[in-house]
Length: 354
Ligand SMILES: Cc1ncc(COP(=O)(O)O)c(C=O)c1O
Image (cartoon, rainbow, N blue to C red):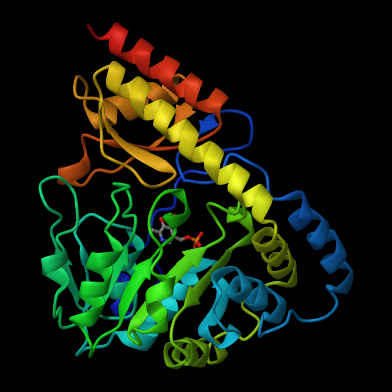
């Protein structure tokens, strides 16, 4: 740290992204990416768009916003596209939280909420998950702050019902309720439909998971025109060309390629159900996941030991050190071959320890 860093940032603990090892060396099940390549139509769209790279990208992301609006049956004024959904979330912290408006979120959830709260000097009101790791909707009724809920939650994979999302939004008419649906396509219920009649509800999604475009960095939000205009205000005060031309083209094509998207997500869901049932046969505990990852407790070994042993066998998963979850590892659902390699490694690890 230099002596020039301003005081308020000196104690920030930045978000630690999952390891991104060089291709080929490890079976990579640690950052919830899709095991499938992007849609061939997205790849083709990038080639086309690259011819115009001498020009700035469209700051309005018009074609991409139209593709998203068409897919969800909303109007383009209800959509904003960003540089990954992390950027949408950062805009939300800037637009909807301040010294009088804390951020309200669970103790176990996406780690970036805490980092953004610190970055933007916002108080965090942290609500413990229930003993079964589910969100207690009661904790968010009349929350007195901006609510951030990942649904399905990460790293647990557990989803909240749409009825509960609606109750939470209705009970907070003076605050924004942000539903982070990064993983919703793998089994959750999207709240997009509710945004039509709930002006304080904002849905955030990403193309990083179900659209196989993590490297493209595309996120988006859907909500009332007023909320979207607020986010646009932040964007145009920060970086008008925040989404590159190639990611815009890729994401628009990926969203329009419904067949490819449906096939990829169906495979992930099938591989998840297969993996969960194999793990349960081996006696491991797995939380009920609606996402493209599972949260697994090996029971006979610690989470840290399991993580390290898997890595030694060439399988990279994610381990978190927080006390409530340190006995779990989070495993991204990959291809059937990747899941078989993970299951084989797990079986060996358990056998080596009897
Ligand atoms: C719950 C949740 N929200 C948002 C994100 C950010 O995704 P991206 O910035 O790639 O769109 C992630 C990434 O893993 C996540 O787990």
